[in-house]
Length: 448
Ligand code: S3P
Image 1 (tube, rainbow, N blue to C red):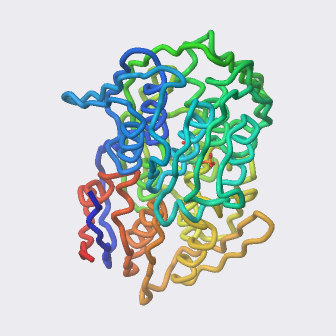
Image 2: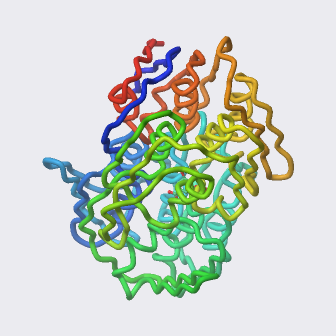
């Protein structure tokens, strides 16, 4: 089924609010729990799975690879086929939709699954994203991709018959690290990963109880991940909580809005995911975490946020690792905070759902905010007062986080916005517009 396309038009400031909300479940964990369930033994049960387009793409791909997935009541049941057992006949086409996470992680699994020779594709946004690093890593496991010269989808994957574990020095990407872990699980011998900059670790935590297949050792400075190939995996019984990257949009709205307060219930607070909140707190935001508890090796809790008087933000390159997806909304906050904010080491944002540096610069320029990008660093010259006789025009980019960031900008400033193909927000956060309405906005929906 194709998603109904629509634009969002807004021209009014949101009123002050004092409310409690819940955001949709975490996307990273939802995709991972389905993928791991399908290569584990027995049946995995997932409560509160995110029901978004990226997750539906995951379910569709796994069903094409022979996995049974059923929903009964609120629970999803994944009938695990066991390691190395996904299969589809030669030439089968898998479509990853908009999801880079699904693409990289499932390619990780399939690269070391026997007898795979399939076609891979995605939507317009995903087809622009460079897959070179992934291809090179999977080549090391013995998988091949053809046509040879292609670095963007669509292309074909032929898996390795005798995959052998590799040594990998992880970089800035949790998706690549996860792809290596997953490929290592069905390889002969061991796969060793050294990670100096700690990116999100949900794959590791989901696998943790399989001490025959994974060993995790961590110090302050480095994570060592050892994968012992060809071991069977236990099923999971999971519950997934709110996505901190989704909660970030409402945190930003509250911080920027006068006389407002918001409680966001039951959010995933894994330390590798909440750099955004620490960064904002450091520059004056009124944010606290409450009712913190552990669930399935993951930290969760409530976020309580109030209107704040922020100073310009100075985000050194270390923040890239735990705020990866929050830069578009951080740029909005910086644009509306008087003074010079700096974001260092962010060049990877060029290869997200869109070129997030270029596209966000265009958006803030439309409200008269100057910015300079050079050598991986972005400087934004923020202003408190914005002229409201302009229009924020956002073209169709297939980038959910840019759409949501642009609407937050419009709701705070009252500058008219026309955001095309807003339906792309359904890839990660289907309830976003309903929640914005609940907080008091009366944006218009225009069908295409
Ligand atoms: C993700 C990792 C990040 C992030 C993406 C989700 C994941 O990508 O931007 O939205 O679930 O592993 P990279 O690993 O490419 O930085």
